[in-house]
Length: 461
Ligand code: ARG
Image 1 (cartoon, rainbow, N blue to C red):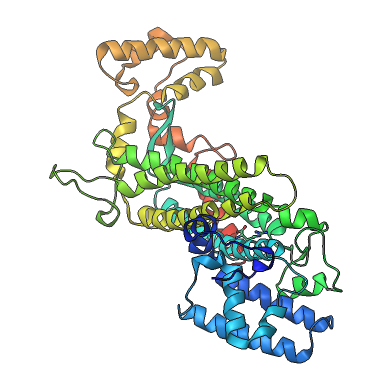
Image 2 (spheres, rainbow, N blue to C red):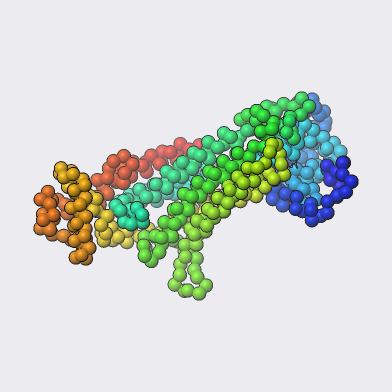
C-alpha cells in the first residue's frame, strides 16, 4: 500500500517489516481520542482562517462519520498504515476526498499522539478515582459492622497487641485515600495540551493552541514545543501512582490469603470469589486475591518498562516512544479490574469474628497492657517490661495465659499488682483503652469511620 508519507521513498518495506513497526494493533484503543483531537484541531484551523469554512464543514462531517463507524465497530484498520493516526487520515480521505488531506495542516503525529494519550489518561484516571472511592465505601461499611470485633494485631507477623478489626480495615481506607489524592493531583499535569507543538518546533501556520486546548477541555497548553512532544512524565506518574495503589492492594491480598488459611481462619472468601482444585476436592483457594497480588508485578513492570524506554532518548520524538502505550493500557486495565474485584471480595467475605475473639484470648497480646499498668503505678517502664516478660515466661512454662495466673503469682512478681489486673488484661479493655488519636480504641475507630464517610460524601465524582 502506498504510504501517506511515501513521497521521498523509492522502495517500500516488506509486510513483515511494516508489521514490526506498526502500533495499530494496540493504539486503535485511542480512536475516540484521536477523532476528538482532530475535531478540535480542524475547528481551530477554521477559526484561524487556515482552512475555509467549507473545508472545515467537510472534514468535520467526515470525522463524525468515522466516529459513528468507530462506535459501531465498523472501522477496518490496516497494518500497512502503521498507526491509528494514519489509518484515520486515510479513511477520512476515502470518505470525503482529497480535502481530508488538509486536516493534518499545522500538526504532526507527534503532537497528535501526545494529545490522544493526555485525553485517554484523563478519562481513565477519572474512572479509576470512582473505582477507588467505591472500594473505600465498601471498606467503611464493612468497618462499621466490626468496630467491636477484636482480633490480633501483628508486628513481624507475631501477635503484638489486639486491635479492632474495623481499625485494620480502616488502615486500608486511608492508604486508598492517599492513592485517590495522588491520582486526583496528577490530573493537573495530565490535563495540558500538547496539540499544536507540531513535530517538535511549532508551525508556520497562525494556529491558536489556546483555542484547541479549550475545545478539548484542557486547563492549559505546554509552554515548550519540544517538551510537549517529548514528555511522557504524565504516563510515568500514572504508572507510579498505579504501582503504589497496587502495592496497597497486594499487601491487603496477602492478609486476606493468610486469614483464609486453615491456620488463621479469620475470614472465608465468598464462593463467588474463590476457586476449587481440579484434584483436591476439599480445596477453596483465594485465587482472586492471589491474582491481584501477582498482577501488582505486572504494573511494576509497566512502570519500569517505560522508565527504561525513556532514559536514553534524546529530544524530541523517537520511535522508542511508541513503546509507551501497551504498558499504559495494561496498567489501566489491571488497576480497574483489580479495584472492582477487590470491592466484591471485601463486600462478600465472611468475617469469622468468633475465631478472631478466640485468637486474642489465647495469646500474649495483652502483655503490653500489663507493663503499662505497672508503669502507670510508677515503676520505670523498663523494669515493668522485665517483670511482665518473666510472667510471660512462667505462663509458657505452665502452658497457660496471663489471665490464668493467680493473684498470688502476680503479687510475687510485683506488689503493685491489684485485683483489677484481670479486667485490665481483658482484650476488650485492652483495645478500648488505646484511645489516643488514631489509635484502635473503639471511640477512635468510630470517629475515623465517621470521618471516612464525610470524606466520601465530599468527593465530587
Ligand atoms: N505510532 C506512533 C507512536 O505511537 C505515532 C507517532 C509517530 N511519529 C513519528 N514521527 N513516527 O508513537
